[in-house]
Image 1 (cartoon, rainbow, N blue to C red):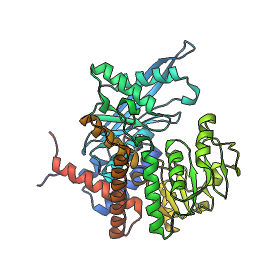
Image 2: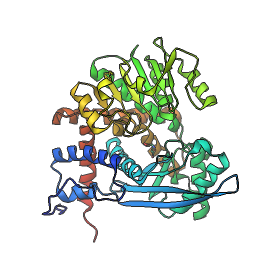
Image 3: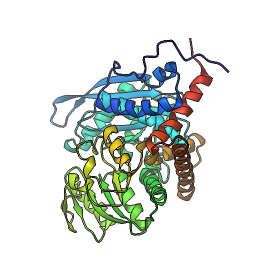
Image 4: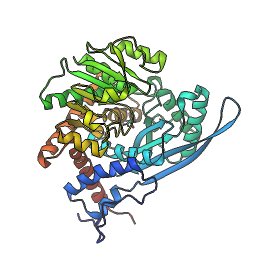
Length: 433
Ligand code: GLU
């Protein structure tokens, strides 16, 4: 089958002229370009795969509890849908921009391709500070945001999920708002729902479970065992806390945890379950009564075996990479390491398991939830966990093999795997009109 997606203008790499292009999308492009060069990707496909398919920006007026009207800017980006409906979370955070959401949607595209789940990549976000909003305000904002993007989402179009500062309750509001608009209860429109409402067993823990599985494999790859390994975790939301809990259960010693406010260090190992309870009550791990206080910056340069950045983008940068002493970095967050920092660390022999592989457990269990919703038949948690482990192991092995074959780092290898899969399908599907 020959489909012409090349053209004579070989002015790639590209992307700088696209709307929403900023530093975060630029970092994604840099990673993409390295792998696309190795694959000798045709210029036409290069353009297709570096262009977001659809970017939606909406204004969401919300009546606040005070009676005042506030207007929040919301985004939904469907980056690429070659492999299936767009898939990706919704985040609520003051720093949300079109640049960030576009980069995150692109990362979802590559993540779904690496994990071999039949989805494209999407992401959504609303620029707001949920820590300063009441539950009623959050509900009104969620419903208005969903109403604004309702025509663009759906079980076969685009399926949101939780992300930073959104949870199963927010997903329940998403599902209800969509269902009210379409006139029928549609559970498969969103994943990460409460169990009672069509959620999947194991979905909430899935990202952290995936992180812990690849951390175990990465340690083995780097020549040490998880047993007694010293782990430092940045971020204690869903991903950070579950990763810490499961790594501890696998025999590792979680010696440090920090979050947006601060954190703690204890050489003897922290009681992660007690920290989860403390964080639930205090919204932070800062002040947890153990060990000694630790700043975010100090955590990154800790002498640990495994560092798990599980907070936001751009945490390990060219400014602090020289201080990083971990042997293995497992990226629980999306985009925590900048391309320049990644280069420096890789040259120093640090093994970095990239986000699009390391945190793919979340979307993999989301895929299982979507399948269960469409079948109307639910699996026991053991089945979800077993299938998740199989998929994570398969993805890890494929990426390691690809890294060996091309003699590249794991990030470049993961991109090679992902781009190759999306490019192959795009060539097969050909060009419409
Ligand atoms: N927000 C998660 C991520 O970044 C999950 C996305 C999903 O399950 O669709 O991977």
